[in-house]
Image (cartoon, rainbow, N blue to C red; front, side, top):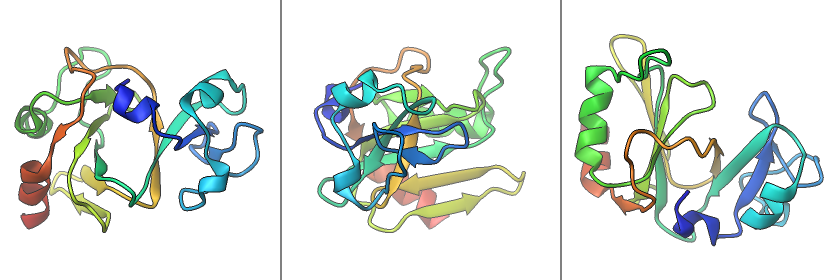
Length: 160
């Protein structure tokens, strides 16, 4: 995972149903910093089944969530998702907890989250604040551990 994420104190644990949890196993909130912790503390906690990172308006960290785009058996991406990953460039991309989606991490000015339904029933979600994203640490392909500028990708996705 990128150090740019690990050095921010916006980590939570997550339950099997993706509900955010504090390191003590209580309910966490994507809008209450008192329920967040350091990466070190979240990693050391055994609450829930994994980690999550909170997106906040204090910076421009964003996540583009691509649902049902990855064949978990072959590792092949749907063509529409491959185009988005290509356009995102050299940035951190990880496989989602479901194993068939991707989270593309980067930087952009996203103050209002958005879910874009595709004609085939899949969806692209873009978030920059007030949400938490379940993290797996399962890097997709050769994605680097850096956050790139995703402003152009976000602009294209939200204008269609």
